[in-house]
Image 1: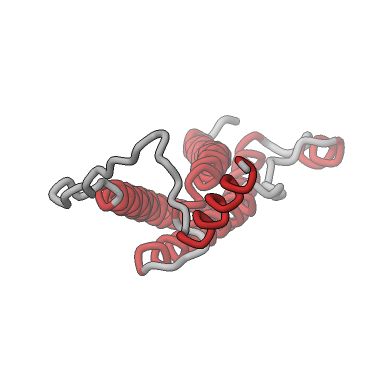
Image 2: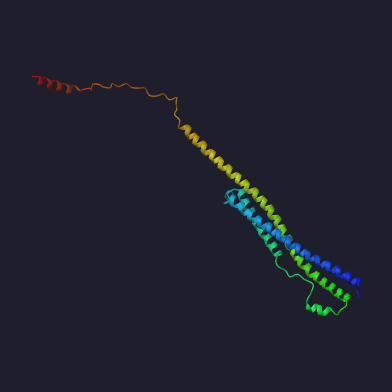
Length: 230
């Protein structure tokens, strides 16, 4: 004989149990999506650091030291979040309503109200186990989400610091290049001649000048000439 009260209790317990199973699937689905998003974020962030690492590492200024610290915090937050999300996706034994040969042989002779009442109690026990498993997964998912939020804030701050350090480095390079160019310009200007200095005077020399002869040589030459004439 059908009993509407026990049938209602069974349907109610079965619906509550189905809700817990759906909650379990939703938690795993969110964990998988967050884990995929986090993996893409880690790869993108690593690529950014690869191109801009020279602007803040090795650290010398205060901004560069802050950038290094925030980058380390970002990676720690991402690693923690990845760990929590991975644990939330870990395989867990979830309760199910029994349906085997033993169940059929045991409850087939019983009346329908008795079966409804027995299954209601089974659903109640299954809900307890399901809620316990979902509670653990929910805690891991919430912690993973919090660390994702922390890593996003740290990532944004690190990008700002890296760009500031990069602009500062470029500015210093530009200033040093300007100083070098100004020094070279000064050297070039100092190499220019002073046009106010008067030039030396020109001297005039005869192209075929008669060489000067000393008096002793002239007398010898003259005596030699006279002897030759004789």
